[in-house]
Structure formats: structure tokens, C-alpha cells
Image 1 (tube, helix red, strand yellow):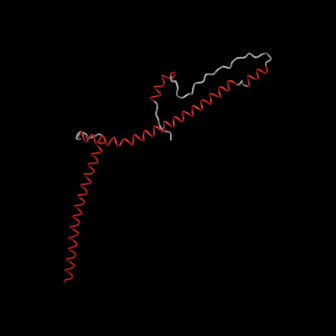
Image 2 (cartoon, rainbow, N blue to C red):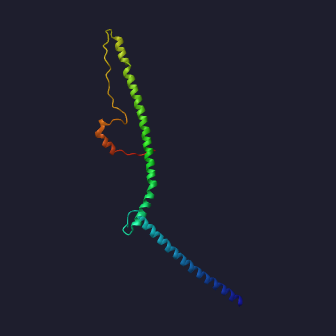
Image 3 (cartoon, rainbow, N blue to C red):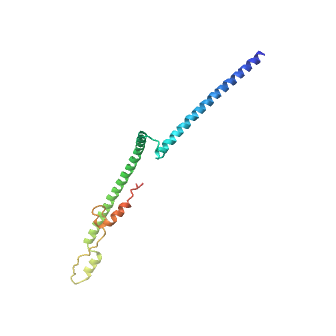
Length: 171
């Protein structure tokens, strides 16, 4: 009989401990839940303030702190943007130099071609017995491919070009 009573007491004691620990854990869970809920509310309020909403309740000091936080958040964004712009500008400058070199080579070839008589002219000179009349070769006007320099001839299209200028990095 004593053994039965001992087992009964052990079981009842274990149940009481379980009940007390579950009520304590329940209280801990509700406390933790309320903490998390309040943290979520604070974060949502901060997010709305970062968006520019619900600023009426803020004091001058709070507004200054918010402005400082937003400014600090924008610094890496501006840095990245400036880096991409500089990379794009340097690529465009390299491209400009390349095109300028090509333009210079083409102009040099054109000048050489104008100075040397063509095969057709040489045949005409050889076949004709009369002294040839010397005529200077006709000068052909090609549009200039120079980049930079004077834009006086393009004044009307400069404004249009400025508005259509988009610096997009070439990947």
C-alpha cells in the first residue's frame, strides 16, 4: 500500500510541476509575443516615416534625426551612381578617341587618294596624243566626323541632343 501511495504522490507532484512550468512558459510566450508585437509596430511606424507618411506627430529633433538617417542611407546609393556615371563617361571618352583615330585615318586615306591620279586618268593621258589639259581634281566635301570642337553649325540640334542624352553604362 505504501508503494502505491508513493507512486501516487510522485505522479501528482510531477503533474503539479508540469502545470506550473506550462503556466510559466505560457506567461513567457505571451510576454515574448507582446515584445515582438511592439517591435513590429515600431518598425512599421519607422518605415512609414521613412516614406514621408505620418510626420505630423514628430518633433523638430525627431525630424532632424530622420533626415540624418535618410541622408546616411542615400550616401552609398549616390556613391554607386557616381561610380557608374564615371565608368560610363570613361567608356564614352575611349570610344570618342577611337572614332577620332578612325576619322583621322580615313581623312589621310582620302587625301592620299586625291593626290594620286586614278588609273582611268592615266589611261586617258596615255591614249591621247594631244597634250592633256591639266585640271585640278574636283574636291569632294564630306561631312566632318569630328567629335567635339565647334558646334556653331549644329546650334539648333544641340538642345535636342542635350535632352536626349542618356548615359547608360555599356556592359
